[in-house]
Length: 277
Image 1 (tube, rainbow, N blue to C red):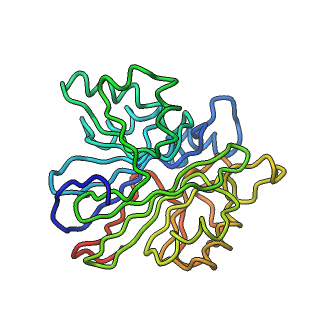
Image 2: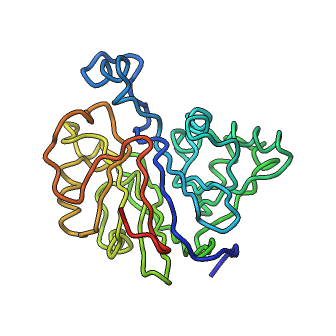
């Protein structure tokens, strides 16, 4: 089963701290309608993708998925001063750029944090930031990981032109609750789609509504492709994250029932005695 941390079954709260693609919204160089609105009223303002998991185990410590360069601002906005552990999807800067700041926070607190990542991802991170091991324990999670009442599995997915990433599936056996996080993927084959089936919630990355660039240069699904994927996988809910400045949250795209764009601060409760929202 891999590593185990004890905890009582209970509901898990997901909170989106960031829902942007790698560049953030607004882009500093851009004057498109979405970037202008993001500067003026902030409705479309988005930080790099990160998800807070509260209640993963009984100790009350916060857990994040990914730690991008906006980590500090996201922690402040969420009213958090510390985080116990982070699950890492891949070693691109928009997903690991905040590890340096987190390591400094761990140093200040006098304790080491724990970062779970697939074994092949860890050396890439430490090649770039070799000093992180002083304050962060990097633990491979290729085998299923047990945290509280949740079993967590990761698997490799196509990231298109950008290589590969990993997705995570969470299962709480006591309540038959499953959900998955797949922020950076495109062109999934049947084996890669299999863990996304049977989930109450799937969080999926989509950069554009309809991406105009040649397929071989792309790295993430677009919204129209996500609609087709929803029809195939049929989760109770599909939430879209990793949104570029092509996506205007003030616009009605006519998304099908059960699909929505994730906004900063959006929460969902899953498992335990909680009913899915």
